[in-house]
Length: 359
Ligand code: NAD
Image 1 (tube, rainbow, N blue to C red):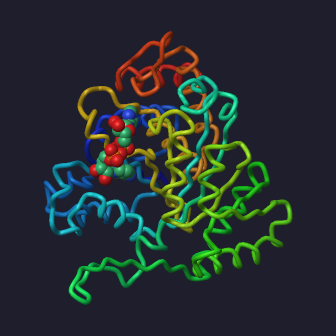
Image 2: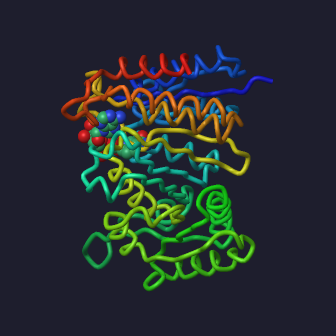
């Protein structure tokens, strides 16, 4: 039976970059991949058309899809919406929550051709290959109670940082299994010297460790992890952490690789249903100008093939095509430097497609 893929272009550069990624998906279909593609609205586009950043029809389609390809959501025109539940980001959070996409995999892989594009010295970053496993549906972004209220004559804002043992255990297992398939090292990042919730986090990780004797587990406080990521990032293989720490650390790891425009991500639930999206946002500053780098979205398609569709070979073929195009010296503006050839979003997509078809 054919697999269903839902494409959600979203806002800003979202439509431009997903157009390029869909070209590759169509080429995979021509190569024999049995998939059906559908499109729907999300984020600001959903709000403008339906008054809801996650229209009911979109959620229905998402529930029925085997995998979702998302561009990005958000933009300044929606930042002033007073009803926070109508903001574009709520569409994204709603999808994660409704589909129970608790495991966010964010690789930070430095293509050797881009070592010069990093702000760190090439010797610090060349060969970098980190997988950050971030818990995505719990922690302080979702904890209750939360709010802003009047107390003793002034406004007070508060959130709740909460994790249950079962939530920690299921993300821990994803991370241990990922470490088994990679370099065998897992670093769990917490703030167990200050926060009780992460004392529990550390206890659960330690309890799981004997079940994975081939994985070397270590622990690091989040402030030190931020420092180590820019000091000596190659010490990391797999990193597992909670929602907020993972949000921040994975963006820092992204920049080690030179451009956020290169980094894909996957968010999975227990049934391998997944949402695949670039790590970056909707980049309203460059939207509609052909400047956006589509490679993170194209590499998200590769992750989709690997983690939700069981097509590791096609995934590797896409990754090789991206490598080929970089070898050929083609660069979008964000990764261009003297001696390379700057191309538009569409030209980059077409070049990857051509390399994919030749491979
Ligand atoms: P951003 O990631 O959109 O942009 C940060 C910088 O990186 C900008 O200078 C942008 O031009 C550049 N950039 C991002 N993606 C690029 C690409 N593919 N190619 C070339 N350059 C690229 O982050 P921001 O500016 O903080 O946020 C903009 C909007 O995106 C906001 O509304 C924010 O809420 C939203 N956002 C959405 C997501 C998501 O949909 N997953 C994630 C983060 C931010």
